[in-house]
Amino acid sequence: MLETGQQIVTAEQFQPRVSKLLASKGGKVLEAPFALTVYLCPSCFAVQHALSESGRDEIVRRMAEEKE
Ligand SMILES: [Zn+2]
Image (cartoon, rainbow, N blue to C red; front, side, top):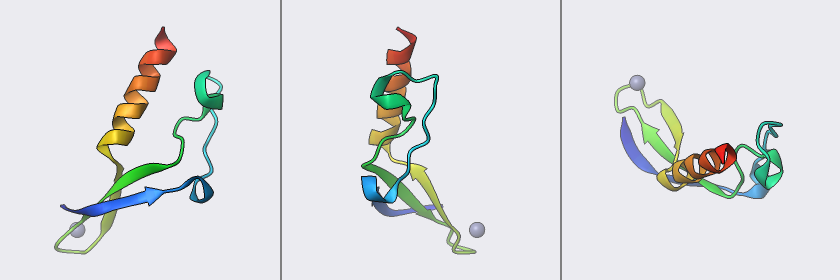
């Protein structure tokens, strides 16, 4: 997969799923705005998205906070 760029997802574009297990930020698992890294398969041109590095750090940080 080739990394082709970043897609920014704004609050207007994203309806967060709320988890009862998460106390902070109203239980939102992921809160917009966040960035997605966009990957492209060079043989079939399928596009895949993954949460960007900064978004991953945020999730890890929040999960650690919840455990305290
Ligand atoms: Zn492919």
